[in-house]
Amino acid sequence: MSVPRPGTLYGVGLGPGDPELVTIKAARLIGAADVVAYHSARHGRSIARRIAEPHLRGDQIEEALVYPVTTETTDHPGGYQGAIDEFYAEAAERLAAHLQAGRDVVLLAEGDPLFYGSYMHMHKRLAGRFHAEVVPGVTSVSAAAAALGQPLVERDEVLTILPGTLPREELARRLAQTDSAAVMKLGRTFGNVRGAFADAGKLDDAWFVERATMDGQRTGRLADVDPGSVPYFSLAVLPGEVASSVPDEVSEQPRVGEQVVQQPRAGTGEVVVVGTGPAGRDWLTPQVAAALAAADDLVGYGPYLDRVPPNPRQTRHASDNRVEAERAAHALDLAASGRSVAVVSAGDPGVFAMATAVLEVASGEKYLGVPVRVLPGLTAAQAVAAAVGAPLGHDYAMISLSDRLKPWDVVAARLAAAAKADLAIAIYNPRSKARPWQVGAARDVLLEHRAPGTPVVLGRDVGGAGERITVTTLADLDPEQVDMRTLLIIGSSTTRVVTRNGRATVFTPRSYPSSGGVVSA
Image 1 (tube, rainbow, N blue to C red):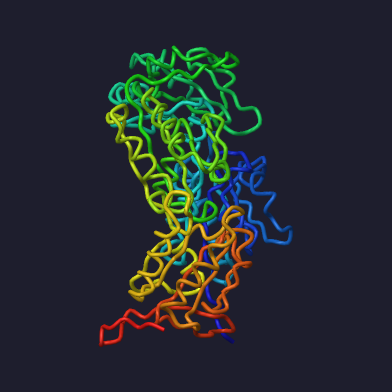
Image 2: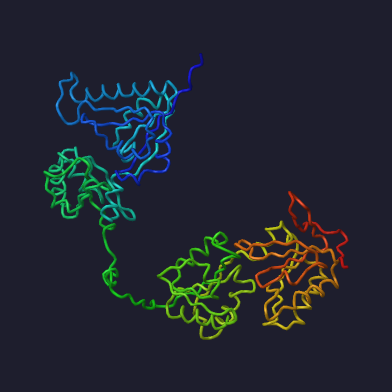
């Protein structure tokens, strides 16, 4: 007969009382356990079990570990401590029997298992014999701070945790020597604890929290609490002086419900030109996300601004796609008035986008003192290339077919030059309603210098809901498959197309023919 593999002891913290503060890991372990154990006084009611009850299966073994004494006297030969030590030893052996039989045991603990918790007594007696894991929980101190809405320490301040069972003189000494304190285990000790705060000269700064996060939560000034109403599950809290201070400018702010008129900041603001990548938030860099979050104003082409989640604190300034200079001037004027401005571009702002437009306008005398930064973004060319493999794996050129800012004969000459140089080419702005003929014209220019079978990639809305990738050849390139949201990649003479797992993979090798000559049609 084989001996079962011993089970695992889990000390599971449940937090301060609110069942919604139970961690996901704690809930999972409670639901999976063979045995669920918990402590209680002789009345049998366990707060820990009540918190965990939503996660119990109903068919698990339950081990109620009932204290023989709590605060009352005992006739045990070893006195109170002797009775408690004997109880812990017996409880440990009850749990050991389950662990030895191969059952996993979850021992529930309010708050955190190793923070003034009963679990620690089982851990000391069993962790050396069986595998034991501890799942931390939200402590009552954290819950009390949250209930007060008050930070306890800031910067270099020191927080001291004290049990209320210490002698009054010792408590007062420690309170006088620390910046911030939380005193636990009140109940019968409350009068002693409040007296220690008074002795330390800190009673007026102290707070009281009862049953934090539970039904019946109560907070107030420590000095105002009726000693006869204080339960064991309460704390006295002393926030640090720095942590409890309020900046002077806060008192000048409008109260809730008053109309807020946002005033320009003193001094000069800043323009940050950002690239959001080719599609949604997944393509956003953390650097750009931080800049967008910090901005007072967002300036950009409407559809690009729509990619940024709305923030009521910010003002949006949307405009048409053909007014780059006006948009740049508006952003710079806002920054000059003290605003933090993000100019939003798709892709990378330095690739056929707003970085150049802003810097051109910012080079004028009026704006030389306005700070301008440019933060990069993932380009459409990179996104399309990655979607099919690595067609831009060697030297390549980026060319825009738009002739709005440069004449078509310049566009055609650059296409021819890149084709003669045997560069892979990423083509931006290929077609619009006003320019439906240019894709065909570009194809014809390229065919004068490239083989008809040259691989061509059409990438539309890469990363978006309408993503479409087409791999074709230069001779078969159909202009009707191309719109303004499409980017074209024209391969070089060495670009290869390989079918892998039923899909076309396109790449341009990093090596090149040793002759070094340009390959043409």
